Image 1 (tube, rainbow, N blue to C red):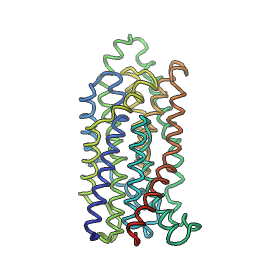
Image 2 (image 1 turned 90 degrees about the vertical axis):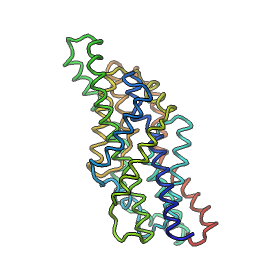
Image 3 (image 1 turned 180 degrees about the vertical axis):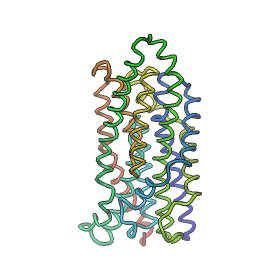
Image 4 (image 1 turned 120 degrees about the vertical axis):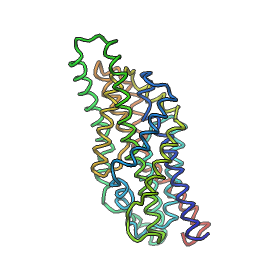
Length: 341
């Protein structure tokens, strides 16, 4: 297989991952607006997919730069490392989708990329040198944001709920819901926009890394066709939906009304857009789960099913190491068939 053919194959697989990301994380974008019955599932996925794609023209490529060269020493990366990393991320995403766990596609990709790079350096330099594959770069802030993103979402949504109840203190619940059914269209759009820009940029970073390591471009810069392809793939994935996770996020974690759905989506969008501004690949799953817990706890803590929340948190913690292990094994298998990988 020529370098060009290999690059085309890996770009195709990267876009498949992006599609699965949209499919897997569609639930995060639409769960609240479906749970509050503001939109039907069909209307909601079209709404989310549209704003996933529109995000291509709004927030730049800082996250793509972080993913491409902020976690792994790109000079040690080969196309085969990227391929194995994508395999690790895709397998973990599909496993957690089957289990209906709303885990992070972002962290699965980071873990897979790192795991494959560790495997290559371990095999070429000795296993004691494996961690030379990683750069300190963006690891500390990214790992902190695993916990900070849901906390920002939770606090923001909680404060918004308090503000909403104070502003509408003289209105009946029915009148509040009349207004917030309209407002939630805006908040759902904002959250889908934040999801599109942060998540599609991760795939842009991987594709650009491939182009650099394959020698098709000399410097790390994201080309326009890469931006459009990544956003198109994630939008198409969102259109396909992820109904198993919609049930977990939109109904099982806590009961939602249009006003609480609005606050959850707005709080989560704020958390994701802050991370995007900082150039950090953050999990929209983490942000919206924290925000939903925040609006659920406004009345009483027992309104949130904390046992389910604990299971979700465990899935978050396991995502990076689990996808790294899968990618590590995938690279070993590739190495058996491609000795120079």
